[in-house]
Image (spheres, rainbow, N blue to C red):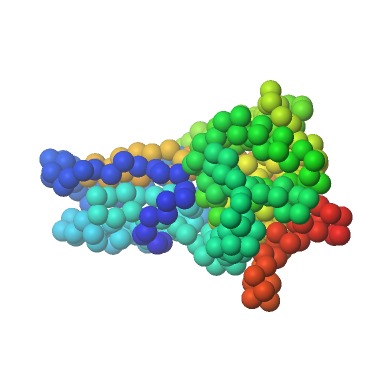
Length: 336
């Protein structure tokens, strides 16, 4: 696992301000006790053991012998880091005062398929508008909207303005590439402007242990139409592997609509709702305690495939063109 902060994904913990708090808990700061609590909590509450075919008991047999009473806190942290890495889950993190673990492989082994500098220089230009968190402009007779983070809030008035601005366009390109997630409420707030009827977009199942395949009955999730402007013309939604967490769910919600086409790469995933806990030594951690399925039962934890796969072309990049934007423009002008 990588141990570097990724700011685009939703912040997960409050770091402790000083070492003193850890020393005050020294009687409970026992490496074996901390390992056993971390392992057993995940054993009872982590949502994807069965889906990912992970034998958690065998994982314990590998890492438990590496823990000893005399080991340093950094050595213990490294063991935990390696053990948690076997879950291959970007929503699994361990936070100490000196480091944070994170799993990044869900996008590092895939094409980037995004160049913001190229978009800013050759598509947004110097006359684009910044409407709340939405950077937007006309691309010929098409509206282009880039939304870089669901951590940046917006109001209905922002969305109403955009949809009215582009009402005469042939269609909209909504670009959420490299959007690592954020506030789940904003998923419904945005998607609600693209439907006139309520529809179900997901089903959440919460781990109801201790069996790894024990879950609650589905909690069905719905999008209700917004009171303001609505958009029923074609939409092309651009995605890559760095579309994670809340963005992953937004893509799921939009993909249920007939007038929306998802273009680009498979999203990064992150379908579980994480919960957090604290170890006796003061370290905090979070993990996925639920699974999210599409209305037809597709688990989105490992990502959502696009309607049309497309990677950036190196020749296009040399000619300062974004392959995926250009393809979307052709689609909306019925050239594809």
